[in-house]
Length: 151
Image (cartoon, helix red, strand yellow):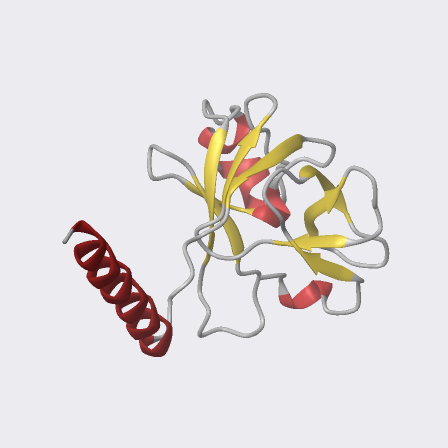
């Protein structure tokens, strides 16, 4: 949802239609998303959330990326991405990332600050077996009533 290094920052879950901006959060070394209206509040995405950027995505080169990666110097030629989390078994690293249509994955903390995006779609939520059974019972009753009215 929100990277471990943002636990000291106010946050809220993302909603469809949220207008986001990438930013460096005060007193952290982490970049992430905030809403355009609430710049000091981190907007946390669920894995599977789809977003669209206003422009091609730009990275902020850091450490060895700056020296060794020619690929990291280019803009990512996509405007749509899906949120994911990496290396969840390692509690001391950044997890929040975006996966692009070509399979490329980039950590949020490596995105250049100031890029605008919008939340297109939240992931489908798993439904409980109980709510599925209740829906089926309601559908069956509705069907039975339709049959009775046709007679």
